[in-house]
Length: 181
Image (tube, rainbow, N blue to C red; front, top):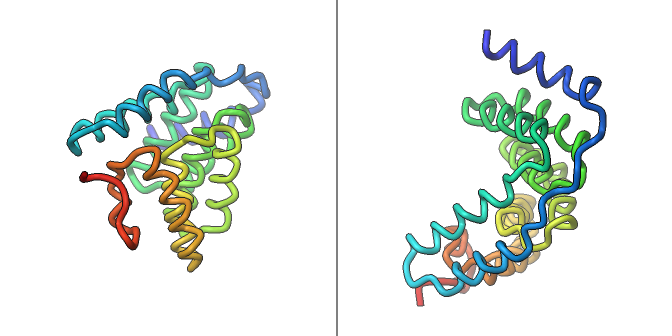
């Protein structure tokens, strides 16, 4: 019953809400501080905490409807219902095309579906909106690597690690980069 309700909610989303999403919150100062925290972190746990706080910033929805669509999509991802998640994220990026996290999450689902070209396009859109979105940068690096574009992927992943030296993906770099010091 819950699956039917959430699917129906997503399908009805756009006609009911229209494209009236307000601008995404300005997270610049808070993100600056968290990037500085991640770069100064002495331990993985401190770096991880900074990343969790970054995720909270990126996920701060511009309006209630965007937050609800994201929540539905995340529920669908958690149970590996990628088609259901994609329907919700399609509605989200149509409703709120200037919110980077909608594009980033849709890219993640497309990555999980191994649709790397579509994931890359969504990541580029997310990064155009928020160039220091560490998760989107990391995702772009991993996507490029999965596409066999290892040199490009390595370069993008190094950008992410420069912003957050404790990213677990740093272990994929050759030579390694980032923490520990």
